[in-house]
Image (cartoon, rainbow, N blue to C red; front, top):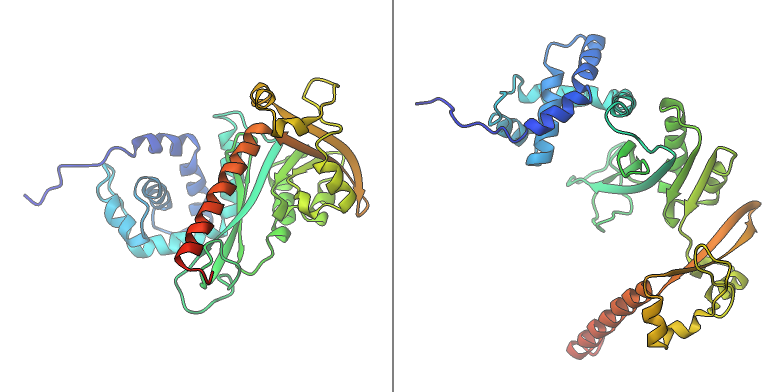
Length: 313
């Protein structure tokens, strides 16, 4: 009676990863720096386990952590104090995690992927960090913005948090500079979507050691480049061959479509825009064409139903 006999041990595989990344030693170093009394290692580990197994509030996390085989030895107010310290030491934690991870797995740090998202808060007023901005979920709430770099294998490398009214294009350069300095990375290729590929960001990564790959909207190309990109009759090649193709027939000839269904045609040229030389590559895929046609037809059918139900629309 009044004794807990049932415990959750499903977190033990996370426990193994946590200690192999030496997060406990990172916590020991931070504890020695600040000389606080609560157990930072216990708090951080439980927050991580709970976030993966049953994401919930800080208070609920503490309650659920009591179901673990290893019982938490901290209180709710300790979590709040620890989070402030974790935030202050975020750069140190990230750089140490990267160094420790290299001893466990091979990190592909020659190619980096970068993107941004944002998170909303259910509060009525903004503050210095949580500011009104363009929410990904179109919510009229204060938001913060998060930028994340991943390595070539899709494993997170580093992140930063900025205020919600920050232009996401301006977040790439300072975070990348921090990566180059803290992670000792030099030769890298940075991959982004079009929204993050400002001219300034492209020029920053157009050096002997750094390069960039980004998506480009054909709609936003200059007219002569747009016409060249959309010309289906000239300049199209297949990888590994110098032969050129007229791919206009792929839109009507079912036999040809089936023959080249798994192929990706491309054409390329060098352009010089805003004193920046770039290699423009345009690709064409039968599969992707069919996928886009399917989406468009569904949108048309949906629009027809809406009009039938409400002709004013």
